[in-house]
Image 1 (cartoon, helix red, strand yellow):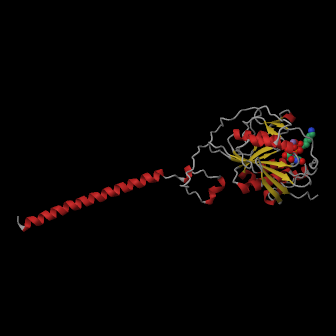
Image 2: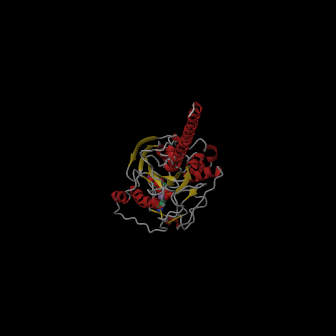
Image 3: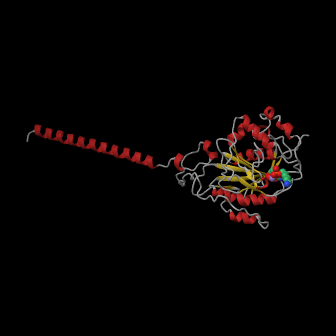
Length: 344
Ligand code: UDH
Ligand code: MN
């Protein structure tokens, strides 16, 4: 073998070596690439797999929590399978708060959400109150299971007027709205008299594209609408709808007019009041007499004639009060406020 043939053998071998090196690096690149792809598909995505509460949505902390993998819950069905329809309500005088608490173990500090599905709406129930303890007990007894059958994420707020000045239902409801929003970004508000108990759970406590009036009939009126345009007792408005009308007027002290004033505000915004069918929107009003401290408001007609002029400056944006306490009781958040007294 001459020198020439030895040199050509070395060149051939290094060619094979280079080819081998090239194919190995191509192989390495392919496996690495597909590995990345698989990894990114499997990675949990914050938008689909993390349950984000409404109030956390804007905080910009949507990073998935790898250590504590969230449980994915589907949206609750359009019609809850738990609904029972018309019910016979009971108002046993022996009922105790403890009984209602033990029957509603899933409720924490007045709040509940279904464990197996994500509610379609988060709803705050606001109840204006003073010295109607028995009515409150009956309402809590019926309302908690009623709302749970509707598979809602909800919380009940009771807004107590401190002191013995003339009652102001509307101002208490404004306060309830403002205080509840400090806890959570509720999208729907139900303004609820303490003595009205819904009879049929097909009367859904959710908000719509327009404000809703939920009391078409009640036992005390032979289940007829009290009058055309009546918008009192129990109403439902979204956070935005209520803000758009600047809430209730704060100026109605004593009984009457504040609900008509809210209707005027709604109509001024070209909103239209919706009502569920009469056979569903039925309530039992626990019998009561007129409360002392809530006499008929003799100024109500005069105030009503001023709504167009004052609604922009009398409402949520001018609601001044002092929160005396916020107690997180098992079945409701108890807000007590000093709301002042009428100027006249
Ligand atoms: N409310 C209280 N405490 C009061 C006054 C009113 O909690 O002292 C709240 C409560 O949520 C009540 C709501 O305000 O449901 C409306 O007041 P209301 O129930 O007195 O009004 P309603 O129109 O009755 O039902 C007015 C008196 C009717 C007397 C009829 C006698 N047959
Ligand atoms: Mn009443």
